[in-house]
Length: 301
Image (tube, rainbow, N blue to C red; front, side, top):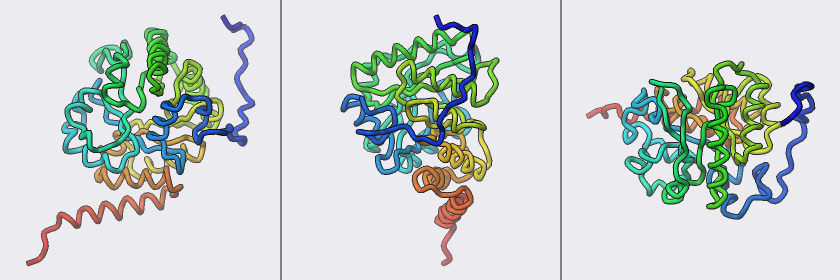
């Protein structure tokens, strides 16, 4: 094992020097097989190298939480505005129209809910991901949780092995360890662990010093939206992450719990793909929101 007696905190991150992407537009993907690159090109827009992922896999641990009580009513109308969908296979089969032609990052582990201890999970059979034409598989990794760290890292490792056999990338989703501080040092460690174990994408949380988290992770990072924020704050979160080098966002509650979800996901897209400043995107959000409301106003006779 590594000698832990002289463990020094990293300091030379070279944030000002972008990682080379010779041969492919996403970092860390140069040496992938054709099928893996094809799937990454579905998830991430080749023009911008970024993605707006719509996460609605919350029900697999939370049940019908606010905003995802009726996927057909709340989420399906938003699909056209997303670059990629993140959901569980039951919802995908039962409610997501296969005619939407959107890439899917399939939630690929499960085993516990908010009623018990989380992350005691197993991974699905990769052949089911193939049957569902998944563009990626998402697996939770609980770095810093003594009870489930080894299990979840093993899940990731095994998912990567299975995905490689079929050309399916794996997204490592970093959970927040119970005893870990939510800072760049922790998220940098967790993201790097995911990449070292074979993740082609890492989903983690934005924090101060996020440019270091991005710099030390050799594969694309997308940020989680986390708890519901006011719309302007959520747009600021997305903007700051993109400015620090994130390859996109994987937002759920900050979209589907918004007062105008369709307007919000389009405003997020403006930040991610068009480098809109938060104030510009918020103006876009308000304009789209007003426009959609006017469509439902009764017309004068």
